[in-house]
Amino acid sequence: MSLKIGDIVPNFTAKDNHGEVFESQSVLGRKPLVIYFYPKDNTPGCTTEACSFRDQYEDFKDLGAEVIGISSDTVKSHHKFANKHQLPFILLSDQDKKLRHLFGVRNTLFGLLPGRVTYIIDKNGVVILIFDSMNAAKHIQKAMETIKELVL
Image 1 (cartoon, one colour):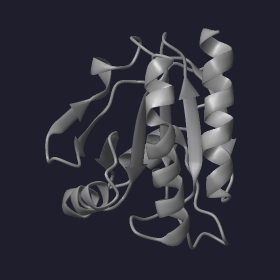
Image 2 (tube, one colour; image 1 turned 90 degrees about the horizontal axis):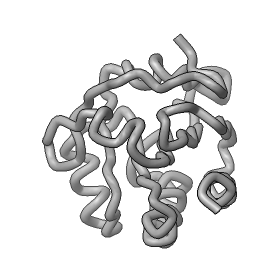
Image 3 (cartoon, rainbow, N blue to C red; image 1 turned 135 degrees about the vertical axis):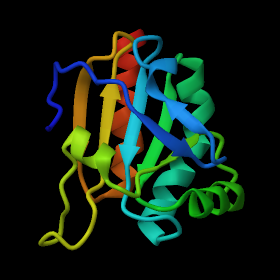
Image 4 (cartoon, one colour; image 1 turned 90 degrees about the vertical axis):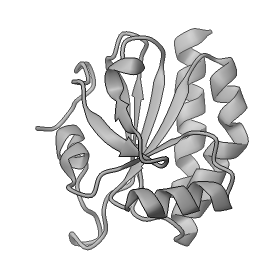
């Protein structure tokens, strides 16, 4: 399966960085979401991206949106990563890559690296933007622009 613009995101569950089960139905269809998939905790690009989302997190919250980061790292890795960089948003562990498959996130660089893709989902649970770029810094700007257009 691969989500496209206009699709409704199906419900899913995954363990968060605190080891708790996150159920998407707690946020899907209730508020705009920024769900970003990234390759790996503590790598330069992924750290830049996470810290940029952290730095603008309050702006996203002020617009009524929630930010969720997803990679195939373990809960323990996510916990350390979130604590080290004081990340205020949810990180989900996708070790079995079910969420990558559900969303349709492909590997890049000849299939060697997990993809970096951001999905913007409106308050009705509908995908309104899919931004696929290995340039980590551009994801935050694109997400913010899209969320602003949604709510303003």
